[in-house]
Image (cartoon, rainbow, N blue to C red; front, side, top):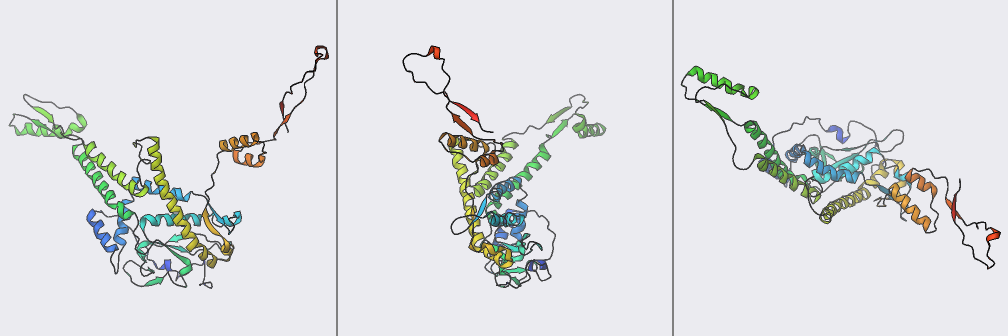
Length: 416
């Protein structure tokens, strides 16, 4: 399968090279546009995802939404992994093949696909010296037709490169099913409603941040009316006025619920709904969250369930789609033939935990590895303490005639 292809070289007929560069501009998004975009993206024939992808770009400017997504994305990127053989043994040298920036990018694209929908990743560029994969690129989603398995020159085209068949199949991985639109399609209505609430609040502040005020007068003089008009226009910076007779300045007092209650509570609810969809709960994301330790622990476990699910999906993707492709695109990955990818679930002990464990082992009669303790804690250790049981000297003049059993006195000596 494509073993004789020009792997790792950049040349003109590379599928990603045919994609025309384009400028992106943010547009005002509405609930109607979301509905229309969903309809276009789910057409049985000639489905068009571009409007929906543009909407995704817009709502991801929301700091809360982006932060919640990052909390799920970064957690999976920071998880430790290992390559194991059939007997479950690991090989540090093989692990090094994946402890590189390209693999971190692959994990990023894999988890991001859960939110943005079907994603195609390109495995192409090899390092000319090591022949190892140098970087991983995600093809622009609007240039991918998952149902047809094509990479097209521009959105709307119906012909292009087939990435699901040879000779290109080893170099492209589709993440997600053909009709997968991602989690963002579900949170979009809440994100848009939040945008409208923020816009309305800004408009309210602009209009009523400085309360409307007016002046009443019984003068019918046009010149006096002009004086009062100028006075009111300058009051924002001057905050004083000169009035005559029955003239009076009044300020409008807002009645009913405050703007804070109206707008901020609405925004808070939208944030909560988006968080629940992504993390399964919102108790561990907002500073104002309240509850007992037990209830918050349950919420944390709900988020952990999603993290575990993400790890399972990505592990399956790597074992089923990535490893065999790596073996085809470069000879240095031939050593992966009998290895599979897995997450390293072993607990990483803190220095304090290492010291506590070493003390307990020593008290139980075991001899801990000094080098291991030094490496884990950073504390240089010169040796182990040893017990000595000398018999203390006895003054013959004070010895009793009756035989007396002496009690040994223990002391410790450090071996340097």
